[in-house]
Length: 211
Image (cartoon, rainbow, N blue to C red; front, side, top):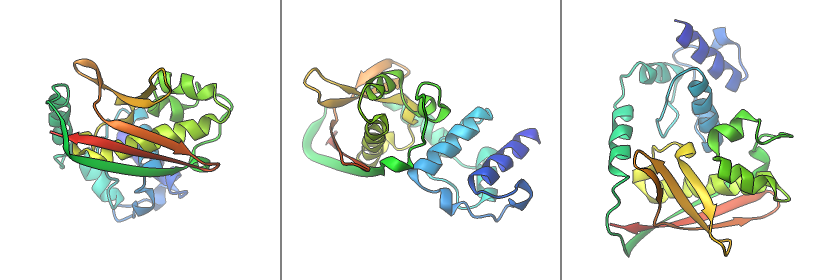
């Protein structure tokens, strides 16, 4: 009962409504985007709920049913994570491309990225360490965000993987690449990634070799 109350209050806060105004048929469509979805998952995680669905349910009632275990999504995630550590020999003959754009201004404002739960919950220590020494940390973190979304778009194997398991690192020449944290440790992914920034926008393209 307490868990349900906490979820209802979390959703109400995100919808800028009162908890008693959130019912089974309350629409969650406004939360079905990259940033709001991540905030919802992070909030649920603080409540002790590991919600890994790649999409935000259409209504609060559907969210409740998912959290009660009626959907197979959690089982599917477990299968994906079991398969990923053993990477096959890859070929670029049928490569797939993912692209994503993020608005830098949509990232939360903070005076301390190391202390803000949004950033510590979704980015690795390596990513934060890289970003905070740049002239605009939010711009770089938005670029990392876009890269991870582009990876999910081009490679279905990563569609339900939590952002915290993915790290955008950099070679000595400054070019980015992915690390994936899995049961077998850290795996350097064979995906090519390019990240670009403008004043208010970060964009990333990821090329996934086809097995």
